[in-house]
Length: 428
Picture (cartoon, rainbow, N blue to C red):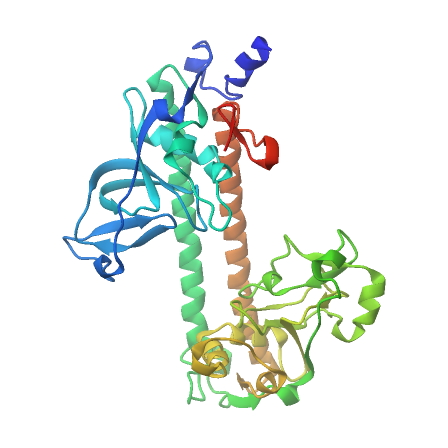
């Protein structure tokens, strides 16, 4: 048992100069840092726009706004206490204010703030939240969470510098992704005519002398506009394999999100034959918070079905490119048209008659349709590639963190009685 404990407190990956430095020490977070809850900040104190004398105000879910007063200055780790991001950790520098929904940590002697930040991130603190209606983290519980600490502060510095360099790469690649998305958004506004106009601001050279664009009602350009239903019994009928069952969360802004796609069996599929997906169907979310998101169906979901929150728009491809339609629907002008059907701007839902009545600007030839669609699709491919690159970098960082920090009791995800992790021998 003692040998297992020693192995648990040695990281799997260690920098050469520290390989003979011995095992790390197991400590409670309360021995590593002091913790203090922030103070209540009223809505009237939060300012919409930052000014020179204003400071960021952090709550449990991140930045809330700006306030004229502040209670901290320096570099600290903040832990969210309640809300959707309970247990979330942020590294904050400079002057700031923390609300009662955040815990401010102050490192003790021999502990580096940036190293502690990465350690806290790895601990998955949300596991220790207590309560039913709105689970939250108490300082008493946090102080009893176990962590491992290297004896040499220089090793802390080395680990923090390594992970910080990866964070810098993540920031850079995120900026590249945001730039691509911004470029595409601006290009879409130029490749489609503005409302009330018949010519786009930007047109490919070979079409500059071509006829004007026309506005067409979507209905006559389709062979199908309809959605599906959810099987009786709801998600109890979902399978791990079978026919793909596409829900609103699987339809993104111009892309399919299939990491959590559900499946239904063949018998259920046969009862939903009128909602079978075909390649090149345009899928549009028509209810809920994700209303207006759309994507084009491909071979991964062809032969599957949609539920009642997703509408299948099947176009006459000799009249309208499904890819062009998809790009238009998620464009600023397309979204404005979708919003116009929502009473009071609540975005409650779209019916088939409204979808049928969508007005779509179309170039005079199929060739120009394809050129516009292909141009935007090529940008989508760049965005997808950059997204994958960013995801791989984040996965690399996560794996590296797991190797640079050894596991300690209560950190590896094992749960005690009642399914909650054990903290220092007691239930969390």
